[in-house]
Image 1 (cartoon, rainbow, N blue to C red):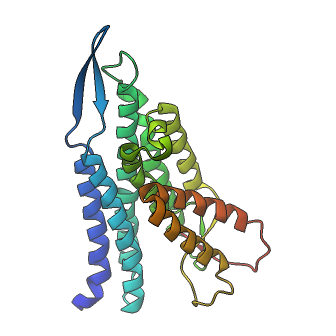
Image 2: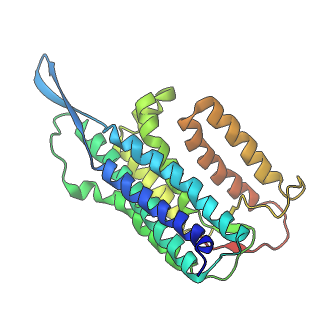
Image 3: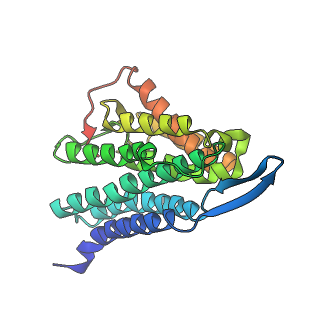
Length: 266
């Protein structure tokens, strides 16, 4: 077995390692500030700085996830075990780790409520729905043989990229969006929305192109150009908006006349 043929699998395993590192950082240090008010002393919970590192791990892993498939095709090293490794790594990095980030954001939102010094785990467990639906998605579509130009449902890396930007939005509070993440109902809503999208039957266009021609790739080029602009102008907030824009474009694309297309099961 040639070592060069294992390069894609090694990249996939690096994806898994980054997911594990992100999980470790998500449960690392937390900071509590004691602040005195006229009514006495109350506690303010601050988001862990380590959670930002978890988000960075997802971003790097998403790039590697795209790269391993490209390298596999370039080296003609696609294999059944590579497909399984990819799904297992994705479950950890783009399923479990995002669920833990939502878990931490929920915990923070509860701690910021007046008089709340302890929150039952029961109220935080809904965050794990992200991991459950990511697992369902990967298991369901891993056995499909249809592969061409579309995803069926929101890809787990896209869902993970959205949550990876949330710790940075909470810190910068651009346009007051960080304050929204202090609201538990907003966080619950995001968990439900992205969980439903991952297991839905909505066709989502893929960025993979058969050619670089503008004809037939109008949607992809429009998305890429707008994404570059959003990230350049708004940074991490722009990244989250890119994912929302991707979902919106995909929904619109479903109503446009087109030829029959295959579905990428990932």
